[in-house]
Image 1 (cartoon, rainbow, N blue to C red):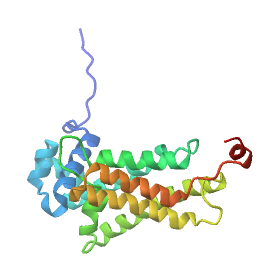
Image 2 (image 1 turned 180 degrees about the vertical axis):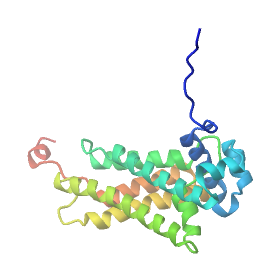
Image 3 (image 1 turned 180 degrees about the horizontal axis):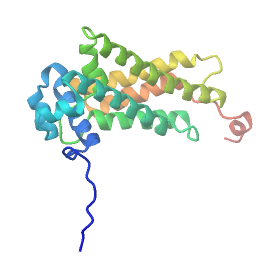
Length: 217
């Protein structure tokens, strides 16, 4: 009897999950920054030896740049999902800030803050490519806020004479503040109060009820 063997691809089979390895590398960089994270740290975090890391991702800098891209892309998609246009803008902004805090303050662990703000701002001083990714990421997040606020303005949820582009930068600045202050040790209640005040600033005073409704009351 002649057995039929499947033709196997040449070389060693991939023994790692690329997405999982990227997540583990991100976590390592997130905790100690680019400069403070060694190749040994990355090997321990991913379970991959140095040759495997180089083969899969290139050098440490290339891996870090890839984690920035991944974080920015995941962040944009998360924003789009949370900033639901079918829900009131105040509600979705509060939900977005609450979701951010749950990431910045992992339960039972040290405060992490924002990966992009916490690591890239330092490296951007001397690395033009990191600086470009940081700038592009911030503009991308501003753009998602602006699109949602323009929709809210069209629905009469924010003032007709408001500037959605300027408000979007304020919305982003609140995220940055929550990230920095969470890592600095501000209590969760204080951070949530800051987020609520920011939503109030962006959306303005709640619209007055119709005149007929006021007469009934």
